Length: 262
Image (cartoon, rainbow, N blue to C red):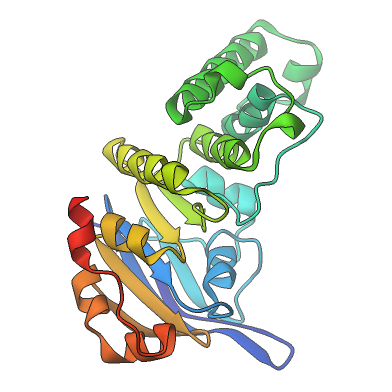
């Protein structure tokens, strides 16, 4: 089943075309990668899908529902969550509170229920707290739940942001360069974690520069260059695509899909 579909998305900033008529789909249960050189338009495309910026033209559909131009909180409520290249946490909150912020996007309590601390609101807050603990446990940060977010290492901040994204209860998760800044051991752990996220029934769209990780993880790959889609296919097909190799690696060979077995 097609979960996400973009049709002819275009976005320009002044005279610079950042995304130029990009169309692709993501099927339910896939891990799909979005790759390309720096400046190819990958993060801009994520921003269009998640409502941070509106497209000049084109549409975004999720589960057949038009999300074009929706606000980020509306996109999150529809079932699409994301992380960012640079983890953005509330430094004066502890780790648990940061993750609870994500779950609050699903909160049903109205203003007066919160202000008066009505029983329904207190029950909901306890559920939000429990969900946040569960997601911290999932990413391996439960022992640091009460630590200030500002005290975390870079890799731990990435995991905390991922836990916050998962706390929104997404059906689809967009990961923007999640391996950036991680060491080799942390990258292996991240790859295992992404597989476990898929096992939970969450579809993953991944922007990543680490081609070994892309080849190991992805079911399918979309390649952008100068804002336009130049190729789409399985990792093996992308590896053997001459245009992709030329524009993306200057003629070098992409990592082998044999790496998927490692």
